[in-house]
Amino acid sequence: MGVDAGALAPGTECHHICVDAWADMEVPLGTVFVSIPTLLDPGLAPPGAHIVHIFAPDWIDNWKARPLLAIPSVALG
Image 1 (cartoon, rainbow, N blue to C red):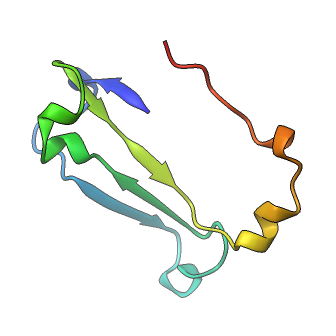
Image 2: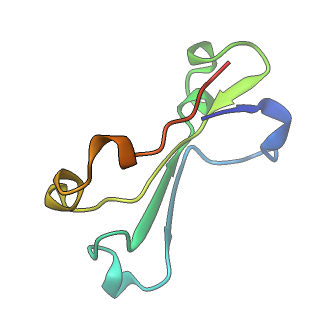
């Protein structure tokens, strides 16, 4: 997702792992990974903006069972 550069505090790091319990790190949807690649390469986004990539891993079989239309989409503009 794209965010205004002012949304990030000075000194924000590029990579983050959010997990309630390390024992659950490999449980599907048990961990949220956040990456902000534009902190390392500002040229990846327009001036004054950052890219924030956020995901929670899951088993591919759980996604295969979902109808394609059930996956939400967001219009970027």
